[in-house]
Image (cartoon, rainbow, N blue to C red; front, side):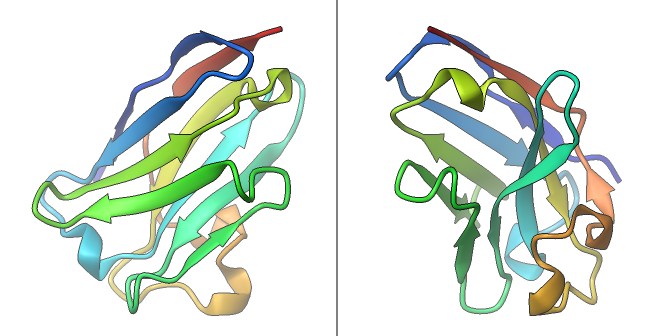
Length: 127
């Protein structure tokens, strides 16, 4: 099952951008969802996650206060609202989801805990 991420683009420093992730045939309300990113020449990093139960959210320190993860159950879509973008936010952004059993809280920031991944959407922030 593939996730479909979209919304990336080239924006100036300080701009806003919203990424979307659709999970065809699955219900995002029943999944733990996450956003990760990988900058050129660097490892994949955790960005944000939302638990299926309670909708609790978690963020990397580098994006806390600027990025917001949310979901629209009716549209079966998870969003990543990114504000005050910086050059260091430039990366390929991936959405990911758990399987039906979810992810234990201690592993919510670990990409290896996610079962399904999207193809990535490129965000480039020009300085």
